[in-house]
Length: 458
Image (tube, rainbow, N blue to C red):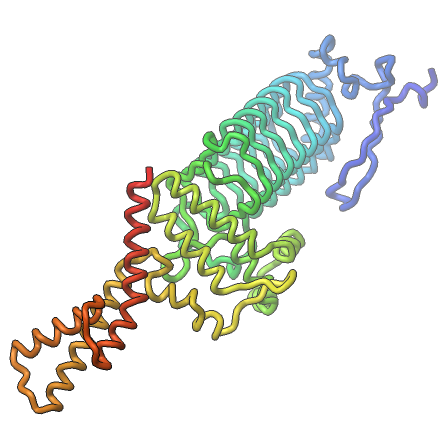
């Protein structure tokens, strides 16, 4: 066999992050098996030559770190490996199969680290691994536990369309910029605990929303196949997208949501909707120096009113199910606020004008009882109407020259109370008071019913 025919026949396309384009990887090693593959690309060779394969792999690691040079391990078949040290050039493990345990704990990747479409057949360890540039795990399959405890992702982390068949641990993991779990499948116990999603649980107050930049985490289209085993604990979720994600039974414990003035929660998806409804916001953001990447642009073009309402409904159902009615109520208020502020005309989302926002039945509902979430508002309004009616009655008595003694005052209060509760009265003041009492009493009964129904539902 001449040199041309004895060369490994493995070929695969990959994205070269230094060149910024897709190139074809052609294995430079000699074929060692009858199938025409080298020791790394033959799917079975490693089984009988484990030490040889591991030794040659370690030589590649050492050479790539010492020179330094780009490391191409595309499509490899590897036994158990332990990788340490610092890589100052891009590292490619795309399409690689780690047949046994793979340990990258404490490793530093100063440029791109590509694990896309790789397979980890046994445990994968990334304890305190540092990714200075992009980390790519799109389409990666983790058959057993995956540990990212203490890992740091300084730039984008892409786990889109990855599959976690068993446990996925993101304890104390830090995502400094963006992270994509879009379309990711979680099939086992999944834990985001003390994970720093953009902001820590202590500096979340500084979050200005989209005005502070587009740093976010996306779980759009992610699938939690065992949602009761998914935990978000001590995490800030103000910059997280949950569109088309089944979060109704996910465990949210000690999490923090972004609050708007008035105390309602605002999810990141609503902010994208705001941009779609008001393109002038883009100019305002650019003037502030906020960088907008292509993915975010596609998101706000793609986001719909129903997408955002669906996120709020799912969160409301989650908190209702867990008997956390105060938080559930805040999500319901947010859902109703989105209905009040926006509407769809065809495929366009429109921010309502002043009249639609403030002179609508929805806004009356808000003013009367905060969409049924406040029983204090109708009580205050009831007292205000009764007091105003009483004062008007006393002024009328005064104009008629009658003395305002204590009996007259008590009589005016009694007349006002009777009229408010529809128990009589035919004067103009009575009729006005009876009309005003109808929506106030109705919303009071509604808000009390919502409060007590929730308390005793389960």
